[in-house]
Length: 142
Image (cartoon, rainbow, N blue to C red; front, side, top):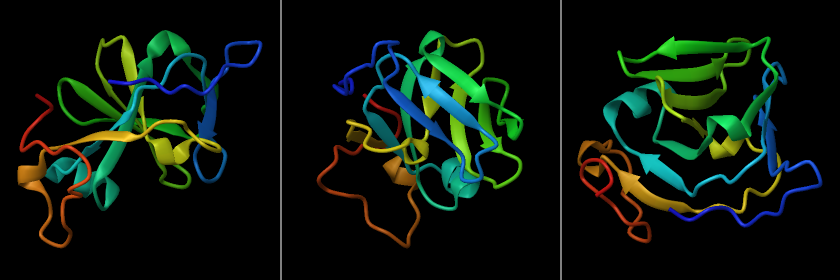
């Protein structure tokens, strides 16, 4: 996966973001990988449509404000972070992983990333097409 080429400021800050109402704010102080779009049934149920996530290292991810943050245990292996006030979908993580995935729509300003792949296309909804311009996989990435 490619990394964003957005330059860091003097403190290593590359991205800021947060939920709609402002009760959750975060910073990314390292590289943010290009995004994956997921068409699986679970993501569509949680987001109301497909989900998109870009990954960074947990050491590069910092919560600035977390009063609204709630984690929802999706399975024995994964959690989803969202704002309990406005409902914004913010994060996804594998438990005990060294990475966290961020919904790029919650970033402030340009992200410098692209959507590099679509996964679980075999499970996509019947109401929209898969984008032929983005590499697509029936299950997870190859």
